[in-house]
Image (tube, rainbow, N blue to C red):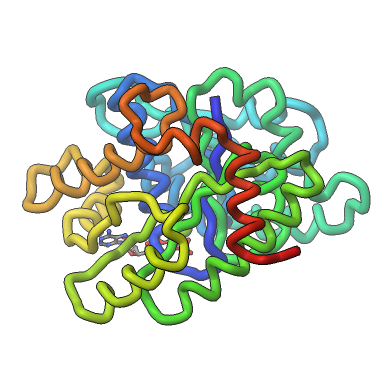
Amino acid sequence: MAVTAVVNQKGGVGKTTVVLGLAAAAAARGRRVLVVDLDPQANATTGLGVWNPAATIDSALDTDRAGSIRSIIEPAGWPEGEGPIPDVAPSSPRLAQSEHQMATDLIGAQDRLATALDGVSSDYDDVLVDCPPSLGLLTVNALFAADRVVIVAEPAAWSLDGVEQILRNVSRIAERRGGRPGVAGIIVSRLARTRDASYWYGQLSETHADLVLEPAVRLRAAVTEAAAQSVPVGSLSRDGAAAAAAEFDALSRALDPDDAERDDAGSVDAGPVAGAAAALSTTGDR
Ligand SMILES: Nc1ncnc2c1ncn2[C@@H]1O[C@H](COP(=O)(O)OP(=O)(O)OP(=O)(O)O)[C@@H](O)[C@H]1O
Ligand SMILES: [Mg+2]
């Protein structure tokens, strides 16, 4: 079991799309997946086909009772496919108020998600936390709950600066948490077939050769359409859908600590400690 926080403080880079793609790929291999939607925009919740959740994550984070997330989890509304349907801890705009409320807790503000997941995450093979586009208290909660971090980056100007900032934050938290979370890797997303996109993809790959995961997720109309229909991209029959699902499958396998076929054992298997060390050495933080 691994809790993976999917982060970038920049909006619209593809975090939620990556969470949904990885969730679908892992479930198709028979893995039990929980998606925790930690963004008040609730895009992962609706992307998973959950429109009127009975309860939402703000109520689980409002208490500091261990395992409080269990009572709000429900199955995704995705159509039956290969493997089990992922579960979701749904979000709602009320989470924005909870974040302000949590900030007034001088003792437990950073640990609310870790506490909420206590005793629950072990029921799953993969827990994927979709973070909001900020490095605020919600993302900090995700980093305190996570074993590892996946950074989603667009191949565009300034994306390297954003990655450096996340790596610094992750290493600061890892220093306080005995090496956790580690950095499992950087997923390059929304890769267009333009010279500019190839240039920035090259820059990211060169600067973070040890962290950039293959393949990149290409920009495809099928991905947008799957999001609009609240279904996994692999369930569509249109052009590009199978290719997009194959990219997520390859990334999911690269990140799967139980997958014997992975070729990049180092960063994943040695996990948090190796990852944190990589983050520290990459940022030159100390
Ligand atoms: N590979 C892709 N191909 C085509 N469209 C994509 C792809 N990845 C993401 N998108 C689209 O780009 C937009 C932003 O993606 P997404 O919502 O996943 O980003 P995000 O980082 O989660 O955004 P936010 O920071 O607002 O939460 C969405 O409309 C999504 O459908
Ligand atoms: Mg999102």
